[in-house]
Amino acid sequence: MKMDSLKLSKEILSRRRAVRIPIIGGSMSPLFRNGDFILFEPASLNDIVIGDIVVCQRGDRMVAHRLSKIYGENGKVLLLTKGDTFTSFDPPIPSEDFLGKVIAVEKNGKRLRLNCGFGRFVNLILAKISPITALAYSIKRHQSHFPQRNLSKRKIEDEYLVRAISGRTLTPTIPPPSRGRVKDFDWDYLLDEVRRNGVSSLLYFSQKEEKENLPKEFFEQIKKDYYQTLTRNILIQEEIKPILKSFEEKNIKVILLKGIALGTTVYSSPGLRPMSDVDILIKDEDLLEVNHILNRFGYFSTDVNPENLELGKIGYLTTLDYRNKNLSFHLHRHLVNSTIPNFSYISKIKMERIWQKAKPMVIANEVKQS
Image (cartoon, rainbow, N blue to C red; front, side, top):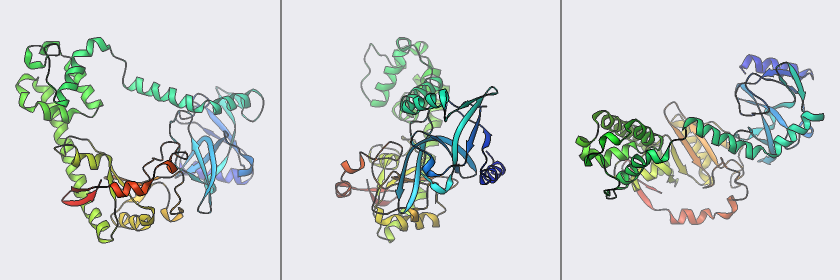
C-alpha cells in the first residue's frame, strides 16, 4: 500500500472504524490470496493474542502477517510476526507501528469473518499449521524455480561436475569431454547447474587448461562468470578496507564470517566464491561505535536503531542489516542468525570461546580475525 493509502487508513482507524484494503502478494496464502480484500479494525495490544493476523506499518507500507510473539526489549514492546508461507520471522515491529487486527477476508465478493464461527476455526487451524505451510510453500517455490529433472539422464553431467570441481581423477565410467563424449553432454543443463549452485567460477578455474575440449560458448560463459565474480569481490574488499581500518583505529575487534572469510582462507583466488554481502561478528559493547563508523561510510541499519537495543542482552534480533546503494553489511551480535527461531539456541553457544579461538587473517592487506 502506498503512503497516501497508509495515511488514509490511519485517519479511518483514528475514528474507530474498520479499514478495507486489497491483498498484494501471497505471504498469507491460502487464507489470503493476491486480489482478496481484508478488513481490519483498530485494536490495542490487550485485544490480540498469538495466532491473530495483525496489520502493522513497515516503512510506507502496511503488512498483514500472523502474530508469533509479543515481548519487551530495552523498555520497548515489540511484535514478532511471520507470513504463513515464510520460513523466517519478520524483523521485530515496535508496538507504535501496530495498526489493527484483521477480522475478515473477502474472496470473490464473499466475506469470511475470522473472529467468529467457521472463519475463526479455519484461522485457528492455519495458525497451528503455519510452520508446515511455510515448509510446503518453500518446497513448492524451490520446485517451480528448479523443475525436477531426470536424474538418470543427467548422471554423466552431475558426476562430471562434482569430480571436475573437486579435482578428483575422472574414471573411465565417468568420462570428461576430452574422452570423446562431448556429444553426450547437455551443456545448457550443465551451465544452469553450475550457476544455480554458484560453482561456475570453480569449474572454469579447474578446467581452464582443458578449454580446447569444451564447447567454446560454454567455456566463455563460465569464464565470464569467473571474472565477474572476481571483479565484484575485489571491489567489495576495497570497499571494506577503510571500514576495517576505522575499526582498528578504535580498537574494535571483529570476526569475518562466511564469504568474506572463506574467499581468503579457503579459496585460492578471490574470484572462486560468489559474494553478495559482508558478514562480520562484533561484540555488543562495540555496537554503537560500529554503528557510528558505518553511518560515516554511508551504511545505515534497515532493521532498528541500535540505540534502542538493550546492549549485552541478545534477544530475537541477533543480526543487523546495514546497506548503502552498493553493498550490504550484516552485523552479527551472535553466531545464531535472526532468520531462525533462536530463543532456545543462543544460550547454548559460549561466545567467549568463539572470540578466544578466532585466528588472524589477511584481507585487502589488513589483518583481521576469522
